[in-house]
Image (cartoon, rainbow, N blue to C red; front, side, top):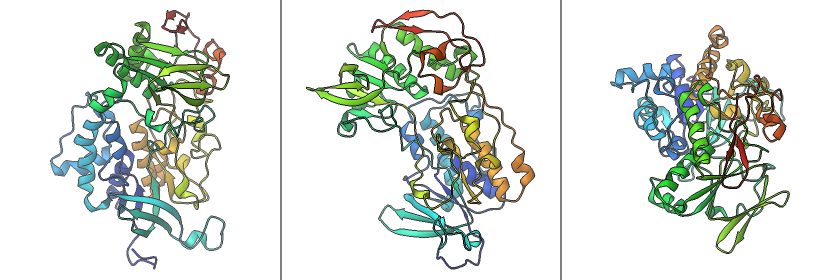
Amino acid sequence: MSENTPAEPLPVVVVGAGPTGLAAAAELLERGLEPLVLEAGPSAATSVRAWGHVRLFSAWSELVDPAAARLLAPTGWQSPDPQRYPTGAEWVELYLQPLADALGQRVQYRTTVIGAARRGRDRVVDSGRAEQPLTVHTRAADGTEERLLAAAIIDASGTFATPNPLGSDGLPAVRERALADRISYAVPDTADPVTRSRHAHRRTAVVGSGHSALTALVTLAELAKAEPGTSAVWVLRRGSVGNAFGGGSADQLPARGALGERAKQAVAAGHIEVVQGFRTEAVERDGGRLVLVAADGARIGNLDEIIGLTGFRPDHSWSSELRLTLDERLQAPLKLAPLIDPNQHSCGTVYPHGAAELAHPAEPDVYLVGMKSYGRAPTFLAMTGYEQVRSVVAALAGDHEAAERVELTLPETGVCGGAGLFDEPEATKSGSGGCCSAPATQLLTIGSGASVPSGGC
């Protein structure tokens, strides 16, 4: 496409052919708007494929976008059992790739977005800016670069490709990059022989406290049962485990609650050592093994592998010429940030939100959706993304009543209190930022001689 004024309406460029991006394309088609989905990978849902061995917390009933289902229906597609919990690989095979196939040539693979702007205007220039279309700069796998015109941009590129580093200050720990061959940032697939050999009969540190970390711990505990000599160390920045195991039976997603219970049992059984209040500053090599070094000088040694699961962050580098209005902490849309900020968030409740909260007033027709819209905040669910794009596409189509009618009730985690307090031991006490009082604490003896409170609200 050239930069000359086109004779036909410009497409809405959707960045990323993952669950939210593909749902956005389906919504656009249903509204009579033309989508162009740009995917850096060779097929749909590249990031989901990377963790295809992991089973989702959400059942199929929460993983299929309604507009996407309507698009797929004429192809003979059959919706999976709504009560089943698929793996990431099943999600791709049974829904996401068929959806991308149904969109046909509207999905362009091996195309990396390297920039976006207003045509002929950098972010400084005001004059004539509002009248100019958006431009999207791309690079193909063979190095060919192209500049496309767009009526709007829906950025659903996610955050999976930019995991947080081990360093507790948000920067890579000293020598983290140099020892990259021994450090990974994903839940291990122990069914893969190469990955299994990295952890079987060896000692692995898992750094992080979210659901990915719990999944990795459960995976390594199961490996320890099958392969004697396998061990894991759970490294937590917070001063006590507190409610890191999640909400248990109080979680409104039963599979998510069950994961925390399995991790708690693995700790109680002695398969996992727990180190609390450890803020990683450096990684050292000690002979053939690794050592984690904390800011206070504490050390965790005799490690063979390290898995960093401390969350993800958005990459805004290619949108630097767009006037995005982002929260200074989360790097999420400014109006959305207060609803998801883990420093304030309580009990896993996220209020319904859509185009109004996702908009950037200084850059009309540009939206961040899906996991990227959450910035550095955790606990994003597919159904959140689906409702986001329904509202955003309604706004782009001029149906402002539908855009404002956001009706989404998300399942609570059963965990109370802001994550910003979790680093402090006092945060586990009653009245410190939670919405309910803490039950009596039960202590579980673990390998390191420390204690784990099993309570939560």
